[in-house]
Amino acid sequence: MNAKLYAASVDYEKLTQAVYQSILAQEGVDGIKVDHDVGIAGKSGVEHQVDVSWQFRQATVEHHVLIECKNYSSAISLEKVRNFYAVLQDIGNCQGLMVTRTGFQSGVVKFAEYYGIGLKLLREPTDEDWEGRVKNIAVKIHAVALATSPDKCPQVTSILGLETDEEVAQLSADFESGKFSMPDGPSMVYVDSKGVPITDELRWWLPEQLSGDGCTEGGPFEKTIELEDHYLELKSDDGGSRRVKVSGVKIIYYYETIDVREFTIAGAEVVEAILKDFGSGEIEHVHRNKG
Image (tube, rainbow, N blue to C red; front, top):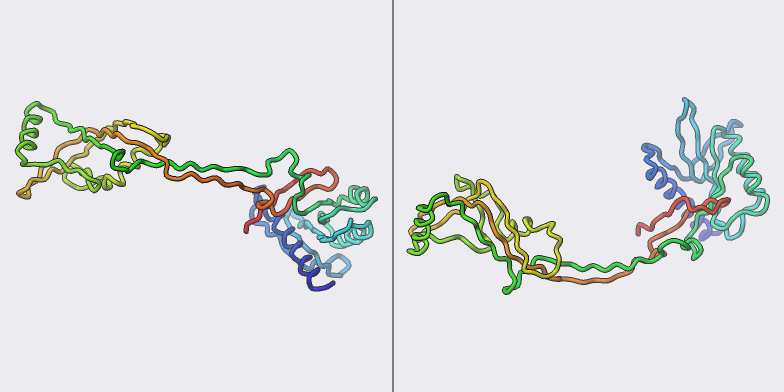
């Protein structure tokens, strides 16, 4: 065998190894490692080279699954399957699978069925394999985000939790006289009763409050959020401060499109190989290209 054919055969064996490792993982079988190119001694004392294998313990008995890989361009002959059967008999307590790209000659299926040898096709998918399945998927991403343009930026109104008419009148007088001013802007935060910040800055806090609203393009939308133990720290020009309780906020906002992208996921590029049962033609596993 020349170097290129040998390398292709080894790659095919490693693909088989990866496929069955994936199958075991999907079936939730933990702790079993699928090996490549191992030597296993038979009852005769002869060591047999096995392309792919794994072992498991059942009823205190060690069992093997042995796979013979044939990266051939023509159908596998009965002679090849007979030789593999002899290896299985010598090793014992094992299940045999023969994997190839093309198929098997006449008589192989009957022999393999009688002696319990699985015959599998492992190869790139063809047009026939895609029949009844979705081959290509067109994807359109329409990204919508909270609008920040000057004419559509969010408007936040703090609802003050003043309890008496006197408190309302006093605060109004303080605002009118300029003694205190209401904090605003994207860096504003809400504090607790001791003046310790309990929210992020408004620029970060606000999108979190609106997440999950559906992000439908357009507006204006309105949302009122109730708050407990939230306060605003009012500042005065002379360095003084005053905390005012906030019972909630009313937000008027818009959503706008920021990006639209379209692309197609081609199944032929995503799927590296399929595993089919040779007898039934059933696809047993789809191996995806991780590249």
